[in-house]
Image (cartoon, rainbow, N blue to C red; front, side, top):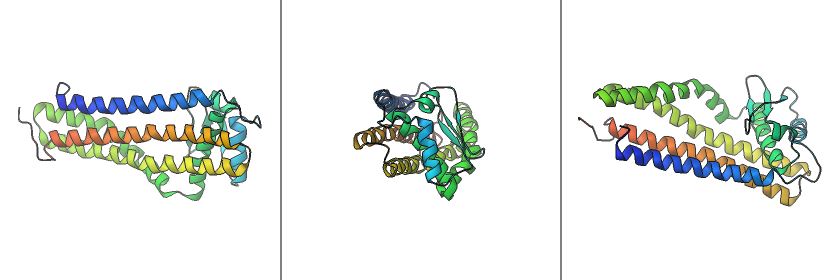
Length: 231
């Protein structure tokens, strides 16, 4: 399978999509992390402001090591920001911090797609690990029934990536609205935030497209789309 030209083409397209999205987000962050916001507020200041404005008082904010390791943990009600975005007083830090608060707002209002994504985490882990192994073994030994089961498991992971898209886009929408309403950023700074958030969203789009292409390939080789390799 690894020497199948079709598989190499699929993975090549996926790699290009991922690299392009990563280049975009890294370029956006690099550009705007050196632009300080006029009010001098750090990422953690922005996060606290939005949480307070939204009436969210049960979420704590922590600094977490690593670059772009920012995330919101709905189970522990913890918003974690990387050092650059926790302490940084840049447009990029403001946008990323606000995005993570966007997830906290989703959690507060019970946003359906976010809850569905949480439920699907175990399914996604099984699909991306066991599913791919079953597909590879099944196709390798000609056990197409096993391969088809693997494809169905992998489809669960693909669905997870699709559910992730509206969750991330909605969080960015909430973040931008909160920053816009706060009045702490200028129009130019808000433009920078939109640039960073749009670039970040592109990474999730690239991941979803790559997963879909891989699923279609697996389904095709397993005979679910009318093809079956007997060699």
